[in-house]
Amino acid sequence: MSKRIFLLLTVFAALLAPARDKPENWLEVRSPHFIVLSDSSEKQARHVADQFERMRDVFQTVLVHANADPGTPIVVLAVKDKKDFQALEPESYLARGQMELAGLFLRAPDKNYILLRLDAKGEHPYATVYHEYTHLLSSPDEAWLPLWLNEGLAEFYQNTEIRDKDVLFGEGSPENILLLRQERLLPLATLFAVDHNSPYYHEHNKSSIFYAESWAVVHYFMGNERHESAQPLSEYMKLLNQNVDAVTAATRAFGDLKQLQATLDKYVAQATFRYFKMPISAEIDDAAFKVRALSSAQADAVRADFLVYNQRTKDAKPLLESVLRDDPSNVSAHETMGYLEFRQGNLAEARKWYEQAVKLNSQSFLAYYYFAAITMNAGQLDSDNKSQVENSLRTAIKLNPSFAPSCDQLAVFYGMRRENLDDAHTLALNAVQLDPGNLHYRLTTANILLQMQRPTDAIAVLQNAASLAKTPNEASSVQNLMEAAQQYQASREQLEQPRATQGIQPTAQGQSSAQATLGGVKQPVPEEPHGPRHGVKGTIKDVQCSLPAIMELKVEGDGKTLPLHSNNYFKIQFTALNFTPGGELHPCTDLEGMKADVEFFEASGKSSEGQIFSIELRK
View 1 (cartoon, rainbow, N blue to C red):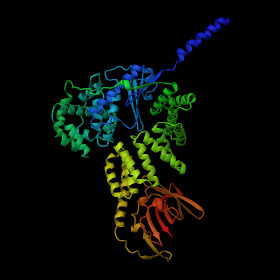
View 2 (cartoon, rainbow, N blue to C red; view 1 turned 90 degrees about the horizontal axis):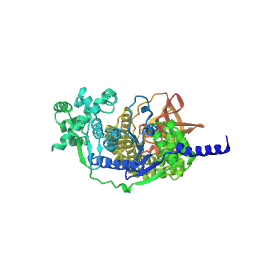
View 3 (spheres, rainbow, N blue to C red; view 1 turned 180 degrees about the vertical axis):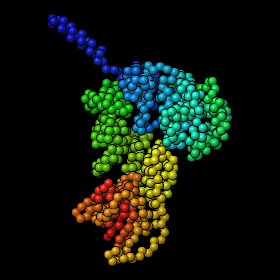
């Protein structure tokens, strides 16, 4: 080959390479309430942001109790075609014969992602997105909304069509309408009572009629409320908010359920269903949208983050590694690597990644939150770590005051250390207000109240929390803490009575001792765990308490150190030998350095550790 031909081929290959390997161009458009990332044109990206701002305005208007601006960001990935969509969508939809998605809403406790395919076809390609967006906006009401109404509203609004001057909503899905005409409707008393444990909610063959009938009832009442002065659905929701159970509220708001059942049978058999139209009132100023081009590394970091949240770890990790090779200071990639390791249970590695993100001056509240939460979970809070944890959580709250987990975690931090309890109580209440349906935040509040010596208030919180328990474990958590609070309240009430004179009783060895109960009250004997019972004498060291009422300590004696614990320190039977303690004992702060005889139950076949049954303090 001549040198001239070789040079021509080399130049030709160089010209072809950019066209073949040219990276996709990604844009970011920030509107007031959404972040849109797209590999399409700026015009399309702006249009998507405009549509979602209109959607937010519409849903905020029609859903009176809507949480229009959730505490976690909403990121929209608007990709130009099927190929780019499949590179990100859940693997389960990639198999042959699976439904072809046009949109996906990915909800997580700390982030919300929407994936859109811009070349999508169909009358309502984004029905899934609108359905889940309805759930997101109504999430503050999920604590008291029954499932049928929660899902019925989402089905009602999922086929919403937003146009330039007005919006259409309420159109039924053909699948739902066909099902209603083919299947026997559930009795309304059954429908209204369906909860998270019901087979009608979990089994596929039953959940379909559940969703369809829920839509039909909401559609029926929405139509009536718009054409009649009576507003039974609004009255029903008002009763629910007053803690009236779903079936009783339905009878009071809707009237005789058998008559309503007959009316609904006729309603679903009609030939057509009306839809509803509403003018759009808000003007969206798209000139205020902020647009910027993203580098390949920046775009890949966001795509990798979505893949991690979407359970496609095998695809996410090499993409993240590539981003970090090209851009070692990419904060987003550090955060995503931290979350990936966290999801896989590698907490030490996750903490390192988040710590690096914090040092890179991340402006993401999630980096600070996860760094603090993982550090606390590791149980290795030295003096430096404690300061870092507190500062990180305060930074997370400053960056995003609407993110409830940061408030809750800082409340837990103060509760563990038994300090700043007034601040801890305020933080716990903020978390509850931000996410009323979260049971954990109410348990934190009750625990803080117990540490503030306010058992009556703690019991009131737990009584309200009981209805939020959706699993046996959650119900058990509420009940266990309730029992602890009630025992503590009983002890407080007895403490207020005059102390009885303590009698002198002979010991088994014939020695005299004065046996007094701490605080003048003998604690109820806790339920006995399984395992042999042992005793140990020594000095109590390294007392550590954590929520809900967990206590860990060590007993040093005879040259040995024995680690012990209690899952509920309110249930420990405390006594004192040869002295009468003054005032009330605070186990988490008063036991350190005291001599004691400790009885415990052997744990997991190991006599060297166990669960504390009783502690007898000695001078």
